[in-house]
Image 1 (tube, rainbow, N blue to C red):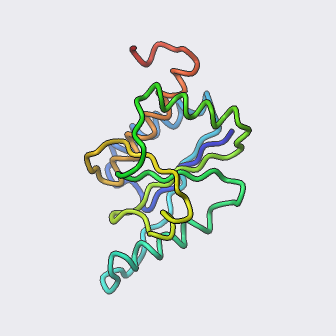
Image 2 (cartoon, rainbow, N blue to C red):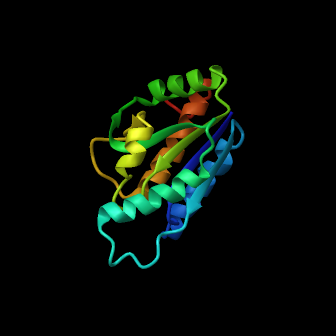
Length: 157
């Protein structure tokens, strides 16, 4: 199975990029994985938040295949413990899913069109984090989930 995380914009903070890269490299020992960073929109000062989210949604949709299993990261989504998230991933892997795609929206979140089309959503917390911080938190959780599945000592129960 392949796991992809689609994001809007690059991670600005150099230290965050280093940590994300570290977890990306670790994760590749378990599953084919990559981040796809879509460019920030240009000239957005005359766009409303909804218009900006709609344009970002079009960029995201261009990257998706009909066979992809798509999950949105959204503050109103289902919350998992790390162990439950690993079980969720294991079910997806066992179901024959070839490509699991997680989508992290831009600064204003995700367009309603994406919410309507892709109904499964995951929340990492009831708290709100920057879309850049979520990248780091999520890649760590993907790595943690894989170590749990392999019964490796990273996660302490």
